[in-house]
Length: 148
Image 1 (cartoon, rainbow, N blue to C red):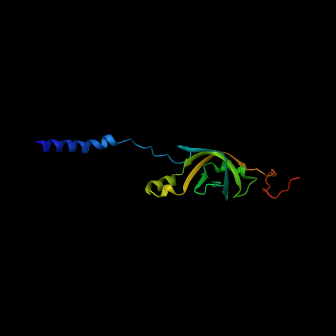
Image 2 (tube, one colour; image 1 turned 90 degrees about the vertical axis):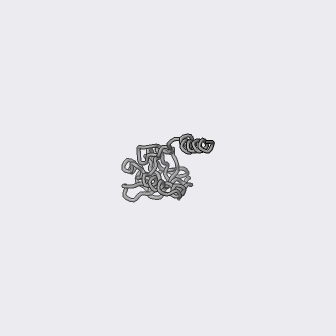
Image 3 (cartoon, rainbow, N blue to C red; image 1 turned 45 degrees about the vertical axis):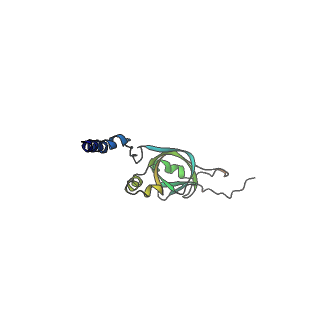
């Protein structure tokens, strides 16, 4: 009799334990431009890279473990007239998860802890003229310009 009662209590505890230990669902972040904003950049110094204007990518100075791809390269391309690929520019905008990164990270527990990939909806892209004189429109930056 006592055995049956103990057995029933144990079975009930085994069945009810997951109910009480359940803390709720964690929301899966939505990836891609215009979805869940991860962070906002405000005039962050970044190395800008592009070749044809179809894709513009950047890497924040001092953060070699993250890369960003612009969601709106055609809108930001006119801001790159005075720069060349590899220059340091100031970037402002909203940051979103890159879908390929999210899918890879969900399939591998180690993938998420390494290199992170983001998309960025840039609102402003300007030259970082700290310590430099402003170049004329279309001219390349020349850091060796002497000042009088």
